[in-house]
Length: 415
Image (cartoon, rainbow, N blue to C red; front, side, top):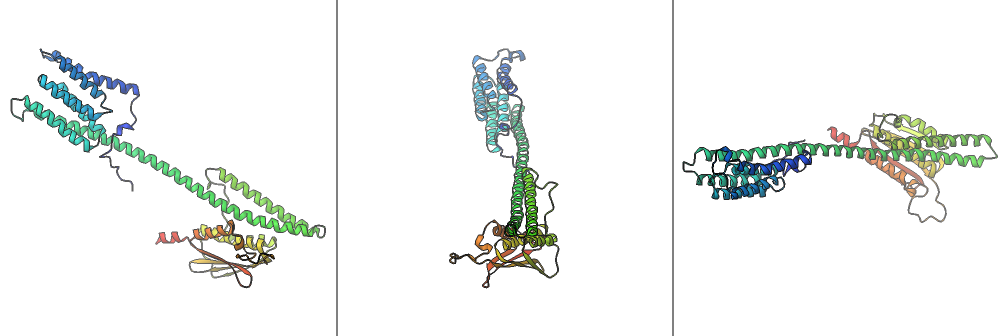
């Protein structure tokens, strides 16, 4: 949950806050620097017959310069203002203008520094001003001048701290919004990358299947060339259809990969077990006879799991067509209570002479562990299932995958 930002100790929120143009800020600092000596010189106009001395005027100029530079060095500005007030008091009676300058310096400090600095500075400022006022007071300590000094010091500190916190809070909200936007963009890019990886896997599965079909029918056409024109024509037709499908798939995937919205409208629906008969028919046309058996009652499956089952069957039969022997494969589907078990068995092709020392099963996909078998393992793992592939003693290659009807994470989240 998003809570209220902690801004009590935020340091100088004005450093990053947008402000007026540089020329306006410079003019304001010049006016502030001239304000103190101007008000000190204006004392005779207010009925003070004596007027300020040269030393007091010089002190007021120094204090004015310190205030104008307080945006950069607020601690130094407060220290110079307090020192100037004390020195001026030692030379002349209490000067209210320099006392106000001290309050302005404290306000500026509270605007730009956290409370752990401002509160002690406020206490020191109050003590210095009160001591100077008390030293010049003949009446009781509770006379109005001392009370006014204490109240104005507290107000300067509180008002400056309140403005600083408000500005820091606004800055924190803006920063949080910026980070949330960046996080959203990163999450979107991650989803796009994940979707493109999925598309790459789909491309491999589709292309591998149709390339296997092309390979089989090209071989048939070459063997029947000059002897059986019908076989040649039929095989070349299958080659043409498979090649066209591959080109269409490549074009679709490339268009999607070039688009920012990889899941946008216009993408074809993903295949599943509903298209299993069509898939078996394409392998039959490629010369692979597939015996299909099913046990149990089919269940409604999650879309991702349904796609995983389809792709596992497609890749397994593609491997059987490319690397198996006998032109036959058995596919069995067993629908259990929580998962469907896919088993594909095909006769492994005999290992060529001279390679008997191979540690991998001859003729099976395990000897050619590439993107196909790796991709199947990743699909099954992503659905929360399991996959095994091995060569039986009788020479048959057996692939068994167990895929739950719903991803394991979804089931656990729903509990």
